[in-house]
Image (cartoon, rainbow, N blue to C red; front, side, top):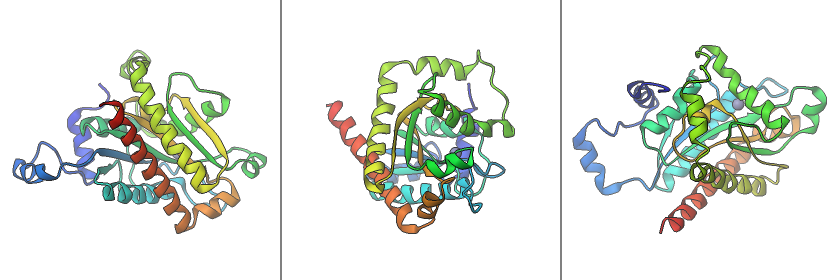
Length: 266
Ligand SMILES: [Zn+2]
């Protein structure tokens, strides 16, 4: 058990989500307009966890939140119910983020991040898009480094999981081919549109052991939508137009994934 259900639901309520079980009158009134799908969008980091920094000190957590809000608006326009794991500058434990999606029986989970490189030379050289889904083993050393950086928030107050506990169990159950395939398809659907629309360097779709994805019981991906550590890319990420492009591409990818999923289930 990662997080008590009540705690996850309380968090989702704090994030502005209507509870499915509460207020039966309202639920009945809404039955005529069932959402096309339920998406949980997870802005990376928050609160004490700033995430990566741009060359002039912009914080990943702030850019990720702004992007998540833009993505949320796009998905709502497509008829989705969208819940954000945080709507402000708040600390949300990594394990609670996917647990919110599980508690809401969400159809998909998308964690939004900005990439970063450690050395000055690499910061100059690396820009572009990298998209991840979960696996117990990292695709390569870069993927391993990204997972280590994104998993570092766990140290900000969460208990270190016992390897014999639920996280390890979930990683094992995720070896279930269908679950991995769905996450893979969602990752590619979004990634291809991001790379094409932003004309950004393509770092590929990769796998790594991300804690934030470990509790997800639905297609779940982690997007690194640009290197905030790269001066030129950070400058693009600063503009409204570029953020809108990112939100459009992510929403189009999700929409295409939903279309494929519906066709496949017929
Ligand atoms: Zn991040």
